[in-house]
Each structure stands twice: as C-alpha cells, then as structure tokens.
Amino acid sequence: MCLGIPAKIIFIDDEMATVSVGGVEYPASLQLLPGASVGDFVIIHAGFAIEKVDLKEAEETIRIIHEIEKVSRNNSL
Amino acid sequence: MRFIDEYRESELVLGIAESIRKRSTRNIVLMEVCGGHTMAVHKFGLRELLPETIRLISGPGCPVCVSGTGFIDNVVKLAKMPGNIIATYGDLVRVPGSSSSLEQEKGTGADVRFVYSVLDSLDIARRNPDRTIVFPGIGFETTAPATAAAIFHAHKEGLQNFKVLSSHKVMPPVMRALIDEGVKIDGYIAPGHVTAITGTEMYRPIVEKYGLGIVVAGFEPTDILQSIKMLVAQFEDHDPKVEIQYSRVVKPEGNSIARKLMDEIFEPRDDRWRGIGMIPDSGLKIRRKYQSFDAEKHFELPETEETEPAGCICGEVLKGLKIPTDCPLFAEVCTPVNPVGACMVSNEGTCAAYYRYRKSEGHGR
Image (cartoon, rainbow over the protein chains, first blue to last red):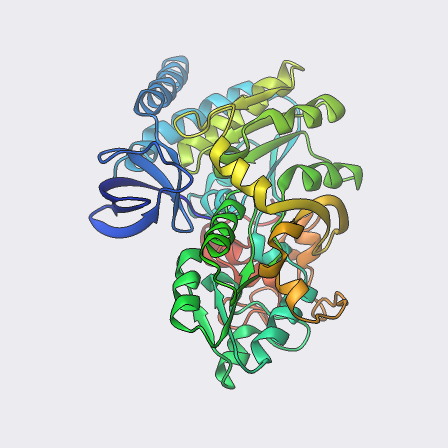
C-alpha cells in the first residue's frame, strides 16, 4: 500500500491519468498533483500521484553517488 | 526501469558502503521509520554491507502493523453488520484482531472487497445505493490525503452511503515518543513519500530537542546507503540537521495541495499505537463538518481493548527494542501464510521482511 513507484503519465482525462510502470498501465488520480502533464514521471501512492520526479535532481543524485563511488575506489587503490 | 535501475548498480552500492566504512568511527544507531525502507534494507541485504559501528533498527512505519487490535475488531464488527460492504486496501485483510480478521469474516459470508485506490470504494458506493460502504482509513501522511480526497468527493456528490473509519496517523509524534520512551536512536532515516507531502519543517523541532540527525531517504539501495552516509557524517561531525537525500521527489515545502485537503477533512487527535500506547495528537479524526462520512459517528462502536496475540512481540519490534528473531514464534508458529501478529501480515512489516529475506540475513544485527 505504501510503496510509491515512479510512473510515466501517458494520458490525462480531467483529474484522472493513465500511467505506465515498465509498460504496465494503471489509473491514477491527479487530484493531489494538478500541475502534472503527459510525459511527466510521478510517484504513485495508493492510486494517487503525489509528486513529480524532478529529472535534474535525479541526475544530480546519480552524479553525487558516482562521485562517492569514484573517491572511495581511488582511496582504496 | 527508469529511476529504479540506475539506483541499484552494484558497483555504486559497494562504493558507498566502502565510503561509509571509512567515515564511521563511533557506534551509531539509526532507525528507519518507513515500511518501504525496512523492505529495501532486507531485500538488498544492506545490513551486511555496513560496518560493525552502525546498527540499523526498524521502527513503527508499517501502517497496518501500528493500528491496534481494537481498530481491527471494530472493522470486523462493521463487516459482520448486514448491509455493510467493507472496501479495503488488501494489506488489512489478513491482520488478526482479538478474535477474527476480515479474511475470516469474508470466508463466512461478509462482503469484503479489495480496492487499489480509495476512489474505487466511491464507485462501489455509487453502484450500491442501498448498502453502506465502509473504508478503513489506514496509513500515514502519504495515504491520508487520498482518503481526504475521497471524503471531499463524497461530500460534493452527496454520496451518503460512503463512510470512513479513520485510523490515519501522523509521523512526528511517534518519532518523539520513541525517544521519550528511552529507545536509543542517533539518527532517523525519514520516510521519503510521507515527507513529499509534509515537507521537512516538521522535523526541525525533533532535531533541535533531541540533537539527532534526520535524513529524508529514497527507496533504492543507493538512496538508503547515501542517507546512512549523510547521517554518519552528521554524527561524526556533531552536526545534527535535517537533510533531503531523496531530492528528486521531496521538496522542503512538500505538497501543499495535498496538505490543504488533509487539513480540510481531518483534525489531530490522540491515538493508540500498537506496542507503544496512546500518543498525543498522533492520529487524524474526521472534522465535524464531514461527520456524516465518519463511521465512528454513524455506527455505535464500543471502546475497544488492546489485546496482543499470546507470545507475539510485535509491539517491541515496532519500537525497535527487539528484532523478529528474538520472538519464539518467528518462522515456527508465525509465518506469512499463518501470521500470528500484524508485523508478519503486511509486506511492509518487519517480521515479514525478516522472514522473506532471512536466508541472506546475518543473525543478531
């Protein structure tokens, strides 16, 4: 129930969206996230989109993690 | 899958684990307070990657688990009443109350239906105008706005045969209560999706009062390890603060639309937590304006007693004081197929996570 998953919005009809998670489609309410658009990645929780996934921040997190990994690898050489 | 696979690369996971090992010099106890984190920690075997200095404990983050037996008993009572339909998230169905569960009631003829979203229970109400539909409201700040949205719709539509029995709870009071009770915690791995709704401001008083760090974490292995690294760094530097690791989803200000809707429908009240007891202002009650949708007002429900199944230590597990393998029932009498206590029932329960991934677990940590 509590496991929010990242899903891509593929269709919007008023307050309801169809989202895709790895090719499987689900209905999701946009009532808590009225600003979402087709193409956005959103977190779905119990049938509601609760927040957008910020692409820039997603890349930044990956960059930081790569940085940590690189530093710890170099230090262990 | 996008936003999942890239956070699971094993080289990255091992790299962060290595950097944590280098940074951590003092013993530290970190608690994850979200069932999703508990599952991920076990699924990816993260404990085994951490140095001896770090102890990870699981907290009361499984909504099904923390709702007391009294709540289940009331839901069971409502299921037994002729004319009622219980529309519920699947998680709740097998949770044992003091004498029965929804699953047992369904087996003896009660109308219990699973819903994926609370909006599905509104559909059931529309299609069955001569029946009363009861939705058991469980979950924290992530799920409460969805229930609020449903009540808001029902109010607008005049859908009077829709009722909610609220057991919704909020996180900060229990995070304080655990420390007040004497559970030793040096840092919280805070729930990512709860905080996506609430924002981070609610954690500041906890950091200030108790001098411990709080990092809002995502749910992939690199997310959790990076959060642990941030908490270790704060601890080593004696610099406790609120930080967001899960910045791709969580904004400091949270989701104000969801919060506004939640405030419109619910107000705080003292609430009972399994194993912990009554915590002031930790629960959400339906406001007077919307009381015609409140199952507590509509039905006569007795004050319930809390009774734990004999031998079950779920309450101690929820406080992080014991681990599932301390329980004599664990994996012997109590399994996911035949659960004795709530912690084994829900996928997000600590006992279920230990059970499912126990082959890859070290013991005693």
